[in-house]
Image 1 (cartoon, rainbow, N blue to C red):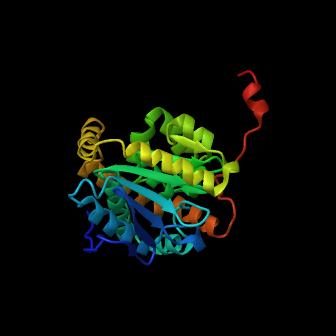
Image 2 (cartoon, rainbow, N blue to C red):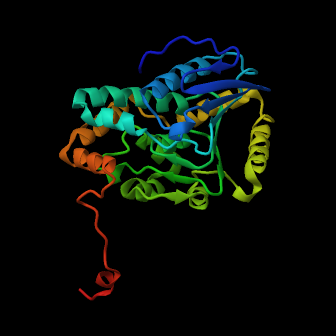
Image 3 (cartoon, one colour):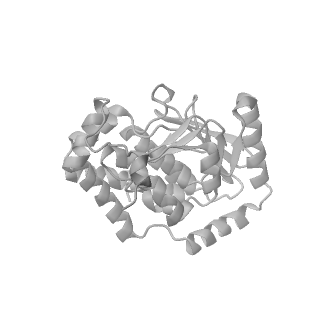
Length: 291
C-alpha cells in the first residue's frame, strides 16, 4: 500500500483536485473537482483520493462517518484518466508503470474496503477509473443518460487494478463481456447488470436527481451505524477483496500491457484520434453461411 499524508478532515476540506463536505447526520460528500477535464484522474487526484480515503476510513466515531457519498463536480462523474496523465504513463518504462499501477490499485482497495456505506452519484459518464470507483461502491445512483465503460482493451491495455472489483461486483459471467469488448453501457443496461441500483430520469433535471439521491442516502441512514460497519466486514469476509498476490498481479498486468508493442500502438492511435490496426467489423452474412 502507498504511503499517505495526514489530513485534517474534521471539518470541510478544499484540496487541489477534490472537496470533502460534511453534510450532517454522518454523511460525508467526496466531490471530484476537476470539471474542466470531466473529473479525469491525474497523479495529483489519485494521491489526494488515497490520502482522503485513508483518513476518512480511520474515523472511529461511527456517528460521524456513516455514509460516504462520491460525486463529480459539473456534468460528468469521472471520465477516467486525463490525456496528459495518459501520455506521461505511455512514455514511462515498465518499472514506472508498475509503481503507478500500485498507487492506483491502493486507491481502489481503500475504497472497496471502506468501513461504511459508499454511494456513488453518476451523471454523464463513469469511464475507466470512474468505472472502477463505481464498482468499488455499495450503491450507485445514475442519471438515465449516464454511460459506463472500462474501455482499456480498445487501447491495447487491460483493466488491471480494477478487474477484481468489476468481477466482485458483477460476477465473472456478466463482467467478461464488458471487460473483453470495452463496450459502453447505458444506465438501463448497467442497472440490469447490477452495476447501478437506482436510475433517475434525466428529464427530472438536477433537482430531481438530487431528490432521488437524498432519498437513497436517507434510506441508508435508517441503519444503525455500528451494525453497518459490522455488515461491511461480513461482506468483505464473504466476498474477499484482492489478497497481496492478486493485488500485485493486477498491477503487473497493466504495467506489462501498457509497455507492450500493442499497448504503445493503441495509446498512440488514441492520442492521434485514429483507429488502431486491429479494429475490424464483421459482415453479418458470414455468420449466416453454412460451414
